Image (cartoon, rainbow, N blue to C red; front, side, top):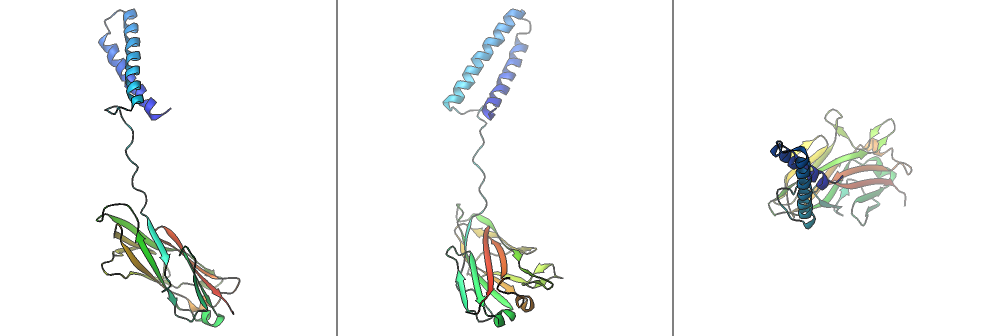
Length: 234
């Protein structure tokens, strides 16, 4: 049953009760006829108005849907870098995956990956509306017997990473929730550069092979980003 039909039944039921009370002293046959006629008239009236789309106190249709989750465009920038000499740096056309190829020697000594990400707020709203923005690490490759390729901190509870925004007049990363960086003052239409500085484990990165590339997955502004580290001898 639709919500409109249910509402009509409730209204007609209430109308019948009122009529029954009003005519409780009228002989039974006349009462039944009166109630039946009233229900027909009431049903015709409310049904006709609803069909015609006339609004009023009986219009219980819900209002517009709430605003969707915040929307951001997010892409890796070619200014991203590592602290070693790479054979190549490749960014996919959608800007969501960056791949570094390093020799075995340079992979063994990898200690820092510095990622630059361009973030733009594409939500629809006034220029003073603010939106929640989050960035977090969601997966890191684990090397058997050694651990993750990204270092841990805070008694091995959190990833060793720095999140910073670089533009003048930028929003603020006002708080950290575990491994998540949070901004609550990102205004409509504002763009900024997010820097993700990962402190890597040279020992664990040295255990990466052709068959075991290094992967770090992020969720930035609701978008999945991926860092890939591969060994190459080309």
